[in-house]
Length: 139
Image (tube, rainbow, N blue to C red; front, side):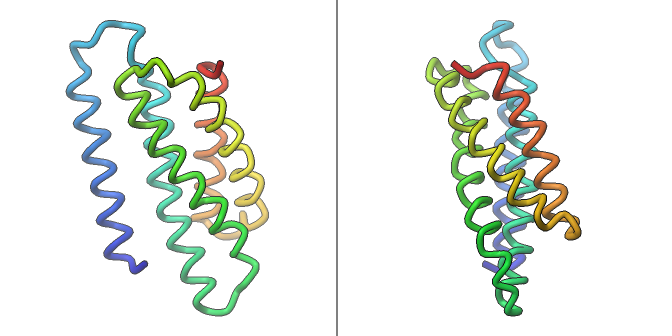
């Protein structure tokens, strides 16, 4: 994955989140969890940057980043789905939030092993914020 692909993916996610926020302005209060939408969106965007960094480090021979890359890949899959369900106030959101809490917590722990790298530290911080929002919603 090159930087152009990562930036394109981040752009699509940001546009999706922005569209969701705009489209939800008239929504009934309590259906859409805006703090969770924001936290999941931040987690996804910072996770994309972290994964790109991991790939660059792996390409340069730093195999210590393999577990971080794997953890962030899982995070991106789960938090992407979390963002979509939170934006629509889906009834299955509490169950996914419980899974996302676990994934975010594990990703944070893995990224903190590489906190000397700003993308990993940023991802860990986003994971903490997302896990906190997930905990409020989780079933």
